[in-house]
Image (cartoon, rainbow, N blue to C red; front, side, top):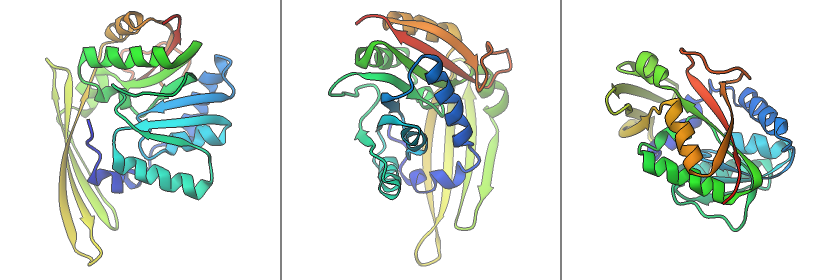
Length: 250
C-alpha cells in the first residue's frame, strides 16, 4: 500500500485546503466525550503528521504509524521544527506492532479506505483491539459509497501551483466498490525544469453494515456512527463518516 512516494513531496501543498485544525477540534471533542483527555494515542495512516502534531500539541502522547517512508520523512521534519515529542513508526497498519497498549487509536483523512479487502480490514480492527487499553477507544473516518459513486467517480481534478501541478483522474468500479486515482504530477526541479511523475492509488468504499460487522468480529463494541463533524447519524448524502468503537476484551 506504499503509494505516496513523489506525491509526498507536494502532499501538504495540495492538501492546504484541508482544515486540519478544525478537524482536530472535532476529533479531540470525540476523544473527550469518551473521557480521554490525555495519555498515549496512536494515529494510523498519519502521513506527513499534520494531525499527529495537533493532537500532540493538545496534550496527547502521540505515536504515528504510516507505511510511506517519504511521508514520514516530512513528518519527522515537522517534529524537529516544532520540538514536539512524537514517535513515528514505518509500519503497514495491517501488520503494526507496539510495545504496549494505548488509550485510543485514531485514523482520519480516509486512511482506512486504502484497505481494499475485507479480511485485511478485519485484521486492522483486530490489531487495534489488541493494542487498546481495556475499554480503550478507536475513532476513525471513512469516505462513503455515496461520495465515490456520486461525487468522485469518473471525474478529473487538476490544480496548478507555482512550482508543481497535478492531474487526478478518478475511475469508480461500482461492482468492486473501488475508486482508482490515476495521479500525474509535474514537479519543478532545481534547474527550473519540470519532471513528470505518475502514481496510482486505490480506495474502497465499504457499506456501513460491513464496517459494523467487521468491528464486531474484531471484538469491539460500536458506540456511535456520526456524519463527519457532527454528532448526528449520517444521512444518505453524507460524504464522510466517523466511527467510535470500544475495546471490550481480547
